[in-house]
Length: 323
Image (cartoon, rainbow, N blue to C red; front, top):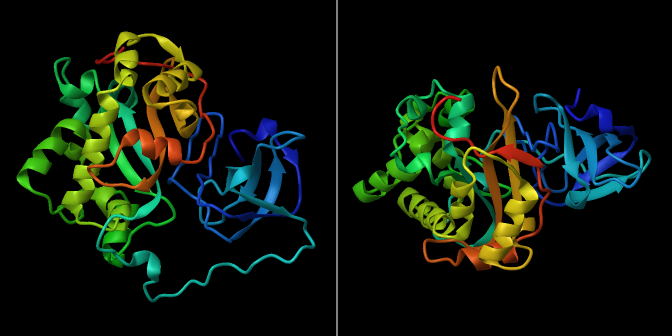
């Protein structure tokens, strides 16, 4: 059953995806176990909608767990139960074009996912990057890199064996990413998850579809994070550490930092702390559109991107250390 089942109004028919969009378990909290996205031109059985004038449809995604997911209505079109719908995408054991690596960054949609690490570690305190966190470390007071996710493609040019390991979260057994020592040092600072081999996972699932080398991919992600951390957004979060904030206020800060309506391109992820009653702001997912490389202007990429649901409405910007 969907986490937002209370909001459901039953509806029959099909939802035909026209964009690769997140398929949420809870659209209120922007939770998406497995990071499931819709497949363009695929028809999904419709189970319901969230309101009389729908902003989200509840669809069936058989390969997802749980299988019932919420998708924003602007990501596709509704078809009645008797309508002709396009066939399911052909599944072939032979690698398809989605697994083909390009040679240079190209204009595309992507998501820059960044974390507020103290909130992340409040919930996952046993992770190596969390047990080693100190108040003086970069990730205690700055946004950190989760990943850069090209839309509509995963596991490009990745062997089935490596994909299987990744999906099983055996990231320690994935191939080491091929980056220069300077890039590796920079990643260790801004992506503390490398201590849990997050860099291997991000390259395997997402970076392989960016169309460049691993070094170029991570240097691009590091540069984009640097531009975000140099903006007033980071200062806003630092000043409010330990307090609960309305994510509309954070969207307004994106507007001030990057231009009018920039905040409408950002989805916020909040999670409930274990054994407590606080809801923590753990992540921001920033929509981008354009040619994405280490020299790209973050402002232009954000303002060119489509708008997205806000996600969670309020969360605590946690301080370092277990509360």
